[in-house]
Length: 193
Image 1 (cartoon, rainbow, N blue to C red):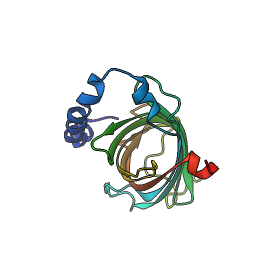
Image 2 (image 1 turned 90 degrees about the horizontal axis):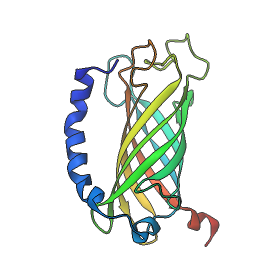
Image 3 (image 1 turned 60 degrees about the horizontal axis):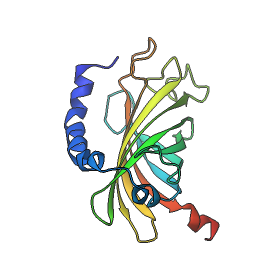
Image 4 (image 1 turned 180 degrees about the vertical axis):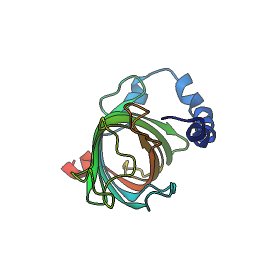
């Protein structure tokens, strides 16, 4: 269940995000905004369960995402991705994200999405099962990423994400946090354009 204690951990972060995002929401939607973002493939790696809950130690996590800059939905862009945790279980999902350009070279990205979590068939194995495996399988992931952007639109960033089922179902699910190092490759670089 979503408790006041869990929410209070994220209130300071939410306040910072809202204060930084104000100028973005005040802008008018324009062709300049929609056109200055490219499609990118993102490779990420890091640690899953970084906020110690006493149930599990942090484990490795790897991500592959497609972030679609050329399909704007107002000031948001769709993304889809897959995450593999400890080579045993994973999550696949999609959602929307928005970039806030803090400077010419520094970008804050706010991302949210929903997907399906699979425990890899280890439902009864306490050594391998995720501590808070939801009965429904549906998980929501929210991420804040701070990245350095190069002139040719490559990015290297650090992401902090929270994944939970938002209290859907009967399973107690306070959520899991991850920290990843993400490398963004423009699809033009991959395609040789």
